[in-house]
Amino acid sequence: MPTHLIYKAWQNTKDENGVIMQNTKDAKGNEIVRQIKFEDPMKQKDMEPHEGHCFLCGEPMTHGIKLKKIFSNVFTDWNIAKCRGETHVCPACCFSILTTKGRYGLRTFSNVANEERLWLPNRMEMREFLMHPPDPPFVINLAVSQKKHIAFKGEVNYSRDIFTVMYEEMPVLIDRKEFTRLLELVEHFLYGFTKTEIITGDYNQKRILDFGIEAWEAFEERVKPYRGNPLLDVVMFVAQKVESEEELQCFMVSELKMKMQELQPYSSMPSIVAGTGKEGQVGSTCGGKSNASPKFPRSEQLALDLF
Ligand SMILES: [Zn+2]
Image (tube, rainbow, N blue to C red; front, side, top):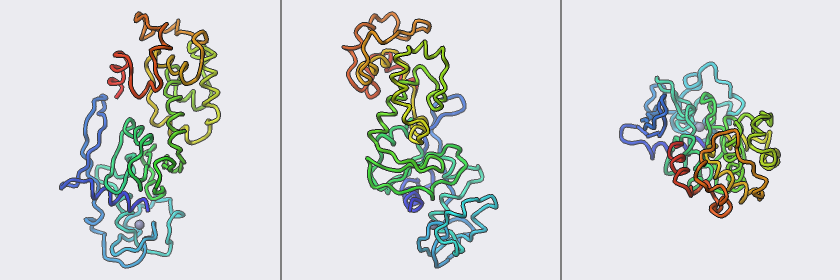
């Protein structure tokens, strides 16, 4: 059960004060490390000895919290309970539900867990987890609204190549290679367009002209089959815009197999590589995965700024 895996991961991750670390940003965008202290279900006053099965996950248990004590009256997930005749919720499921006085709990964080560790990744870190999941078994939950209880609805994964993540309450099947390809495509497309444009297919005409019609078509034809597919939502959740026109052009030549004469420069926008005199060498200077290892000092700097 996902809740049991997450609960075990939390027990293995927290320090002696019950704290786990989260890399995040403050209101001004500065990187900070937050100390997150979740409620310990075994220390709740309503936790009591109870032999039976968990109302939510159906696993046998020796301790639990009564339904009316653990659920607020706004709880609406009754239909997913595994044992509806039962009266208590097990410690692992309680862990995924409990909220602190500071109003945070597992549901307010995207999370990744395996048997060794619980992570609370920011979007950059989640991007890495989706491309390189941890050792199985693992679970991955993407908290979009940060309000829904999704941990007990997810699935435990046993493969790093094909796995299911919860995108809010929607289970999304991820083929890692396909995901990585689509992510790379979208991150380059984001150079010229907004996330909303790419998701809806409703593009600003001026931006199409600035981007170049042929280039736009080449991207659009590859994105279009994914429109309406939740895989695209997961990609957007973690996508980081490529900021360098040079990287964009490399990608179009090497991955989209476009020819140089089809690439229109951004004549109406200030180019960040203007003046380097490298425009003509794009084909020869870029080699394959532009995202993995920036080739140019300028893009390295941008990558650092972005993080
Ligand atoms: Zn349970």
